[in-house]
Image (cartoon, rainbow, N blue to C red; front, side, top):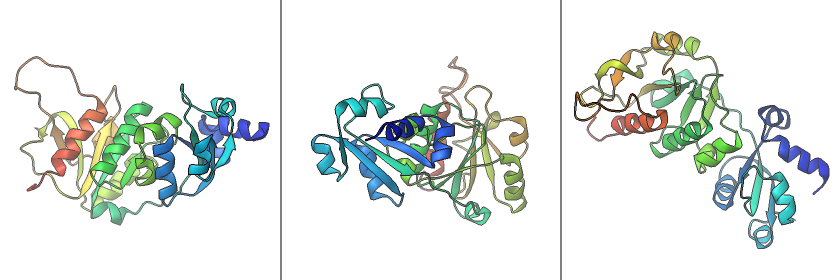
Length: 246
């Protein structure tokens, strides 16, 4: 592995570097296995010791792995994966359930939400440009392989939502003044909007929401936390939408 190789791989920790190279980094046996088994294009696999043979990768030293790893404790194998480019079809949004993220900025939350989308069979996740980059190493790590199966799109949300609502596709969001989600009618199709960690769903996006929902604390009226973590809230909402009999 050359110095230029090391510089390239280290640059993938930065969004600009990923954009220029068209690559992202996947680290650890589980993630690399997921990448190799997926439809994504794996450019290179670099591994230490016996892992090089197991993954049919290029053998490097532990010292070299420490230089290229984005983790505090480097793993034995990394993969350089081509960043996929997906086209978004509004028609596809109309016949299934999709997630929309309005400014979710924490990499851990972003990764967990993509993992949740994968778990609940949601294949399309649309993110505002202000949301965390899904190919950030921390996000990729938190997805636990879901990044290989969930199609992530970045674009301004309001123009898309106006098109979506014009086609009669329901748009759901969580608000303090919304209907109790456990009593509301939840469809098997539509767009679920989740907001920023601090401010929630922005005013511009909120105006496009057709179904306002609320996750009530239990029991009602009892003092509780001010709000839920966005990834936790996403899990509750997705589970409710996927509940049999809905």
